Length: 526
Image 1: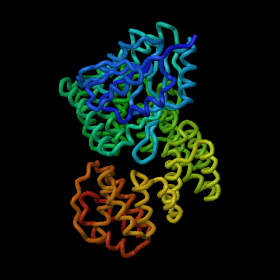
Image 2: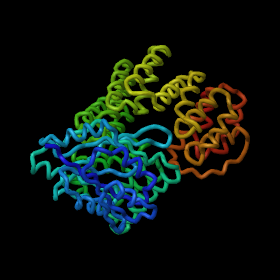
Image 3: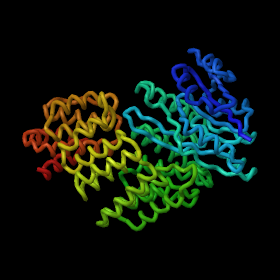
Image 4: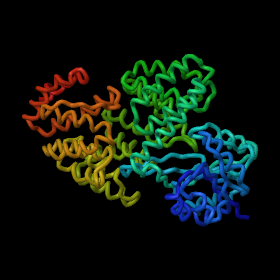
C-alpha cells in the first residue's frame, strides 16, 4: 500500500515563490496544508487554487506555534515540512516516496542545499519528514525543532530514521542583499525578544551564536558569546548538563571569545567538558585549540573523535569534512603532504562542493604535481559533480596563494560572476592588485564595500597608497581585520612594485594603532 503525504507550510507574502514551489512538488503530495500568518499579496489564494487547505493563524513571533497549527491539520501517513522558497526535484520525489513506503522507516533526514548570493552552496541535514504522530510537536520560537518528539515516536514504534540523498534546493539567500539582511534582522529581533523575557534562555543564546556564524558576523558573534558566558556562569553546570545542544553552545562561545587565544579557549572547553553530552562541535573546537598550541597528538585524537561521532542528523561539516581537513593540516605540519591530500580527497567525497576542501585539494595538487595534473583533476571532478563557482575559486585561490598570479585571475573571474560579488570577488581584487592592476583592483574593491565588510581593508590599503584619509566604520573584530589586512598586504607584496611598498611603509604609521604589526611585516618582506 502506498503511503500518503501531507506537505505542511507556514507562509506570509510568498506570492513570488508560490508558482515555482507548486510546480516542483507536483506528484509529491496527497494533502497540502498551508498556514498563512498575515499575507497581503494573494499568497493564500494562489495555494487554494492549487487545491491546498488554507488556515489562518495570527502571528505571535513564534515559528514553533505556527508549525504546530499546520501539524494539527494534517491527516496523511507522513508529514513533510517545507517552505515556499524551497524546491524539490523528480529524483527527490521518487526517493522520498520510496522511503515513505518502507514500514521500518519512521522519519527522514533531508539535505537542504542553500544557494548563496555569490553562487556557492551551503548544505545541511535537517529533520523535516516523519510519520504523523500526536507526540511530534515543534519547540522553540525561533529556529524551531521537533527532534525530541520524533525521537520518542521512533522509540515507541521501533522504527528508524534514514536519509534522502537528493537535495532540497533553498532559494532564500539568493534574493536581494537587503532582503537577506532583513531576514537576518528579523530572526535576531525575535531571539532578542525571547532573551529580554528570559535572559537565562541558553537555547536562544545558542541560536544567536548560530545566526552570527551563518552570516559571518564576527562582531555579533563576540558580543553574543560574552552575554552567553555571563549567563552560563550564573546558571552553573546544570544548565547544560545532559543537553544535546550543550556542546555546540560551549564550542560557539569558545570560538567567539577565544579565537585568537588558544590556551584560554582550551581551558574554557576543558572546564565544561564533564557536563556535556559528547558531540562533534565540542571536540572539533578543542582540536583546533590543540592544533594551535602544537599538540598534534591531542588534536589528531579529537579530530578523529568527530569522525567517529558522525550521526544521521549530524552536521556533515563537523562529522566528515572539517575534521578531515584538520587531519590534513596535521599531516602537512608533520611533513606528509601526500597523506594530507588523501584526507582532503576524503573530505570532498563527503561534500564535493566544500570551498575550503576544494582550495586545499587544488593547492596541494598544484604544489605537488603541477598545473597540468591540477587541470586533469578539475576536469574529472567536474565530470562527477558538475562545474561550479567553488571549483573555479579553488583553482584561482591556490594559484594566488602559491604566487602564480597570472594563472589566478581567470578562474577567480569565473568564480566571482557577473557582476563580481562575494568573497570570490574580494579574492579577485587581491589578484588584480598582485598583478599590478591597481586601478582595476581599487574599483572592484570599492564596489564590494557595501556588501563585504572585509573590502574595507582593501579600501584602507588603497587610501594609504594615495595618501588619503580613510573614514570607515567596519563591523569586524580586531582578529578578523588583521587577518584580512594581511591578505591585502600580501597581494601588494606579490606585485613587486617597490614604489607602492615604499609608500605603504611610509604611511603605515597612520594605522599603527589598529595594526601594530604592519611596519615590521613590510620591513621583513622587503
